[in-house]
Length: 305
Image (cartoon, rainbow, N blue to C red; front, side, top):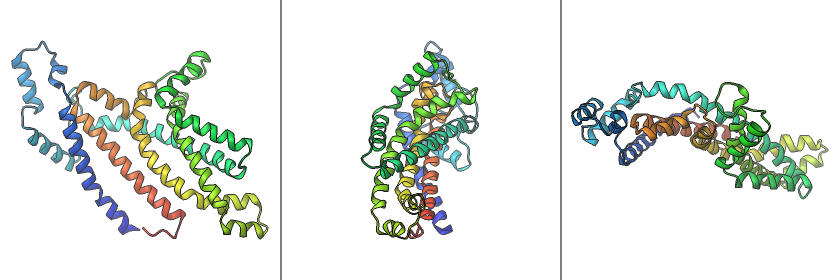
């Protein structure tokens, strides 16, 4: 296990190098000049040239990329072109908010999917099963940019139960959590139902029932444990998607996380901030997948990493 973890951590190096190269290339292909945003298009040419030299934008792109990689090797993500602050500090300020939202959405999705997925499988063909599948279909078909405003209109504007936006109180995280977790809950519910149906047909489940074990114990201790393997795999992959996909949700609810920082940096052509945020998301995604593999092996000892 330790050897596997070391190999996976070393595998991070080419992944990060590829991601950093791709991000650096794409960002510099985006039209627009950050100097125009800082000084304005009416600024004097001499001032623009001085600013360009100060930011290092007058150097060849290859040299800029080399300096960028050198900074990454030392843990330096650079300095914001606009705010003149270290990018690492800006990410540390915003990342907890995004992580909070992703974890809450994940917990909500797992609670819904395991409850309704198992109930739908055990009571196949009943009203519970049909209602679960209908809810899953609606959840998958409703994008976050539509669900978010609908929730705001209903619970914040009409009923005045919850805040519209921000992160000042715990209640302000409820609507963005539901918006972000609804799609994942729908996917995992359908997956849990299908894997449970397959598991309930296995011989060892029939044997457990033949021994006279309580039905609750057969479902929870024997069937659900084995049915969780694919659910854990997909949930791990989807957690990375949550981190990256929180951009739309954070924008809708003015949530002060990494996603809103990326959008703000893109609007300002603040290259170091965009690069740092995307690298942070990429590292998070890889680490979550590594953790998923470890949990997968723990759930099923037959799997050898």
